[in-house]
Length: 147
Image (cartoon, rainbow, N blue to C red; front, side, top):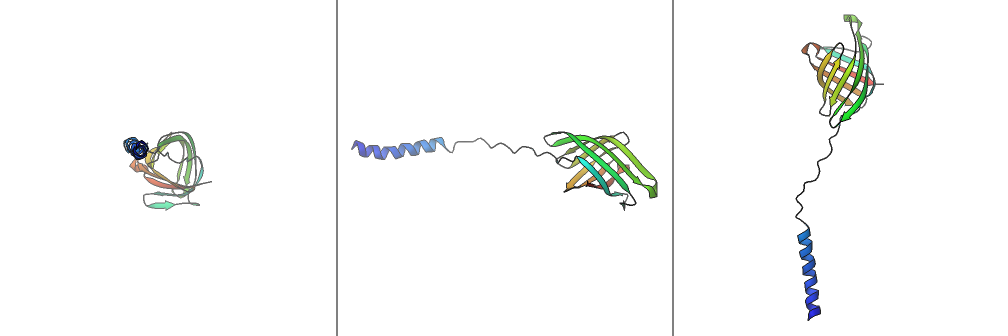
C-alpha cells in the first residue's frame, strides 16, 4: 500500500513543483539595444545639387565632401567634415570645414566656419543624400557618391 501511495504521490508532487516554479515570471525582456546611425566616414563626389527648383550636376557643378566620424553613442554619431562645391555658371563657389552630428532617426546638423545647417540625411549603398531645411535661404538637396 505504501508503494502504491508513493507511486501516486510522486507525480502529484512533481507536477505541483513544476507549476509552482514556472509561469510566475513577470519580468519583461530587455529592450533591444539602440541602433546607431551608419558610419558616414569617407570621401564623396558630388552627383547633384538642387536649390530653388534647379538641379545641376557634373560637369556644371563639381564638389567633394569628406566626413570623418569621431564618436558614436546610442543613436547619435558625430565627426568632422570638409566640403567644396563649385557651380561656375552662376558664380557660386563654397569651401567649408566643421563638424556634423547625425542621429539614427535621419536628422542631420552641421556647424562650419562658413555655414550652419539642419536637415535630414539618407545613406543608400554608397549614395549619401543631405537635405538642408534650415536656414531657409540654404534649403537644398545634395547627392554624393562615396568614392
